[in-house]
Length: 403
Image 1 (tube, rainbow, N blue to C red):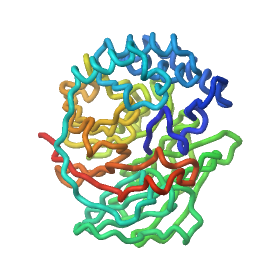
Image 2: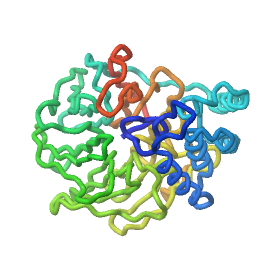
Image 3: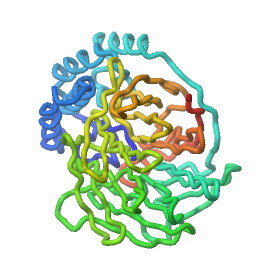
């Protein structure tokens, strides 16, 4: 799903509600628990900058300015691509000279980039979309709506219509969405900020086949997902910091153990042959063999980061990431080495442009990457729009993926 991970009110109630006064936020214990988890991963992952950025934003939310700036300076010095100007957690630091100098350095190292073209525009302003999927057998896209709690169909000509109307099944806000090419069905996650979350299954016409949730007392937040060749589903749980395999026949959830602890997992991608899965969280990407269970961290290389990928996609030996958890959002392509564990080249396609307002996820159609430009997640609290006067038509843009 998507996310401005440090300030998203709907999707991250446990850790990232902005501070509005000098007192600690009500969720301070959860923030401190996540700080402890992040600190425990220092030295255990190839991307130190990602952990430093997470710690900086977390301390900022606790109004611990000294700790926030110290971690932020160390992060920016690594020149990986983090741009704190777009992070609401740092609102209290933005007037300081030190912060302004950091932004100046970041924008020098990572200049404005734009290549996208407008593809579609919705007449509905209050969709607040989160997930996007392409259905190649019928050449249309599916767009999930958080506010309207429905799934929208977008034709190749740009016509919008309801695939699953919002008043049909009493759905929760709809997030990640994926098409199953083996049977034409559609899987999606839904989640609201009181901890309720469901995995949804629809047939190719939008009829609900099943809705599934965890039968325990733990808070969960199902976010993004992929469908494996065997029809089972792997889904990220951002609130519980877990990855689950859902057995589509037995209707059971099983946790997938990975090489390290996950920190707010989000985007997830599967290779074209279905043999390898990539799982993104706040500090990087983990490569997983779902059959053997073996996993390892992908090394982004120097002056690069795989952190904060809301949307993650595999395309011909590359990872495409919608990174909205690194401050100012960007869309980047990461060329993988033959071992699929090292990035050999990072190409930023869109950054600080009118096509990277608040992107969440995207979908591939051949060599074109379509993505949500302005999700407007920052104008949503729970399932309520904060300011209707700020709503804009939803834009979908596309980029040609370099070969």
